[in-house]
Image 1 (cartoon, helix red, strand yellow):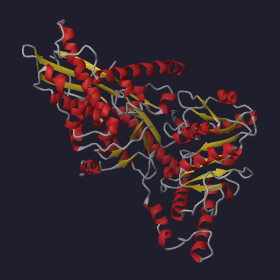
Image 2 (cartoon, helix red, strand yellow; image 1 turned 135 degrees about the horizontal axis):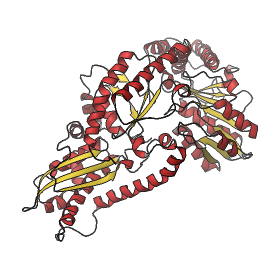
Image 3 (cartoon, one colour; image 1 turned 90 degrees about the vertical axis):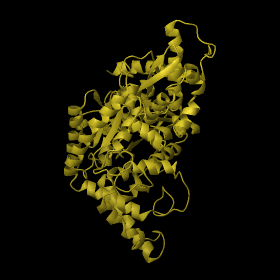
Image 4 (cartoon, chains in turn yellow, red; image 1 turned 180 degrees about the vertical axis):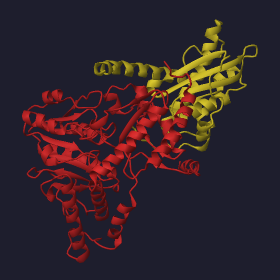
Length: 171
Length: 407
């Protein structure tokens, strides 16, 4: 068991206790998931997009994770409201999210990374889903945050594979 | 950082009822134990027990009484078999490091179970630097060590076996006597150590009938002060110190004995062993009420570890599916209920409780686990309060999870 003191700041605690934009969105334009419960860290983002203007009208989330995970997911949904897809893609980085939330303990930086990974995945998915060509501002290769999300998911798969035979053997 | 903590503490203002169930990680020292310690800071026996003056002789007399009382609680032959250390971490370190060094040249294999506490697991692994190799014996779904594999593992190269009498996370009471017999039948020179930190005061213990060579005792885990523990070493076995310095009343641990803490530990032991049956029944009653209440109130729970007589009376470990443990500990703290979790919650480390993984729990189950230990100082009202706030807390956290991670 890792034991690291986690003195969360008041903003993190406030969003943990009263998360903004929480819950499933029934009329979402796009839904994206990042992380894996095996890692104790998973986020679902729901975006409602004004397709004519390419603007994020609203965003909602659900989160399986620690207080930092919940708070960073919540703040991302606040930060992207009203932004064009391009601005959201370019401006929202994990560093900016960490800053916006007033800082995180270093072992919790990955929560902000995963939240932004989920956002970028949602934006990318929007274009794939529509079957239109991706705009010029959307790079073909994955960003840092998307890579991290993928890495975490891969790790979860490896871990689960390694566990399964053991679990079966004993049941 | 410290500013944040001040704000965090402010969020707890107005709590009307507090229940401390995190007795795994530290505990409340009851007033009667505090009162027993108080005079020894500045009223009497404050001297160094090896010096020739009144406060020194008082300290010596006091300590001898403590050695005597502690040795009796575990059925040791004489008081010289007890060494006070600054805690169970140090006692486990002493037992493992010193017994390996004492047998250098005779063999290089250490055998432990997969579910030993960190202060055994990592020390055994550290001995790799000195040429020792650690083999971990697997456990079944309830955490019982596989004695057949243990028997196979013991060979002429084996110097030490260390298996905790009660697992600190899931309360499994190991068949230590059978394990000792199994090991000694195969190789009588092997030293057998058992960490009794979670057994002491919870199950009857007699080092002579168990046949162990070394045992670790903890003060903090029986509501004594932190910063003190003890190691039992059977008469006739010679070990070297692992730390050097001024030697006082004990050969195996240098430095000036901390009389007030040792007095507190001894007082806590006396209290635990006077009315042992009533004390353990109380823990069991409260623990069972807590667990039964949780299962009555909440769906999708998993009980971790054995039930009934095979489990330590104080231990409750429950996995709450569709909830993450760290979030739960915070949510419960804001309501005055203090528990710990086996969640990893750190991507870099990504290590949920090794004990829960060893008994075949999947990662999600480990991340959502909470560990609670009852004490005889708690009341039924305390448990009722926990059961009042726990479902709300779990439901809120599950509400944030929503459909995420449901598969």
